[in-house]
Length: 277
Image 1 (cartoon, rainbow, N blue to C red):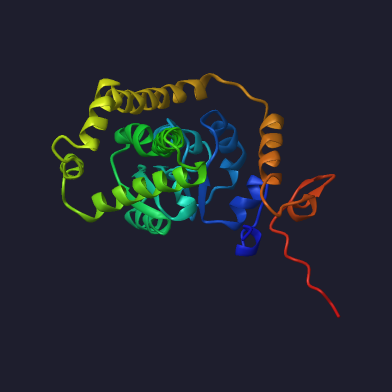
Image 2 (tube, rainbow, N blue to C red):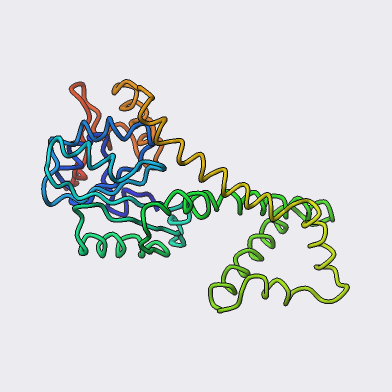
């Protein structure tokens, strides 16, 4: 089902989004955040809650930018991941100086509808980015390798991918539904002298654990670098708007008429045309 059939309105007009919304998610690359804030800042009202999903961009930097327009902007920062599209996401959020308890409850309610959501201190969000934010990519890479192993040993590719995915899904569910340490659950699979313990020995010899630890660290460190890059990089507003429009046009079921491209600009939130007999 396309997003439009779900009642989602598309727009490339940030100002129009602000006028028609109470909660504003800033889901753009870190270096684009300052340009977006400059554009929407004059239209921010007391009712607005600004939620940044940009990696490495701090609450204080957004508050400082918006305080040019309002004395007490309500800002929150969150980090989620791609499995929200199947309602199995992992999201954490931190509350800004002027955001209220009710704002946190609202955000948690919204994000809990697409997975797990909890509040953390802001200084932990970069680590969360390295773990669960980038985590799906680690899982997909591991699954791809598992499937390759199955194919090497004679399994059809489709079956190998499905079995590998189901193994990861089942293991995750077992862990979440139990109070056991993952190490204990791992031990439960390993029979003395059996196939699994021999396989784990190979993984340990290849530095499997260290690779995952180093991957989380690398993602976290890079996230911290992004804030500095965001402060240094310069991109023309025209280039940003073109990038945004291109992404909107790539959505299933979206065309020029749907997003309302006109010679004097772009307008969305178009109401569907009613048919007359």
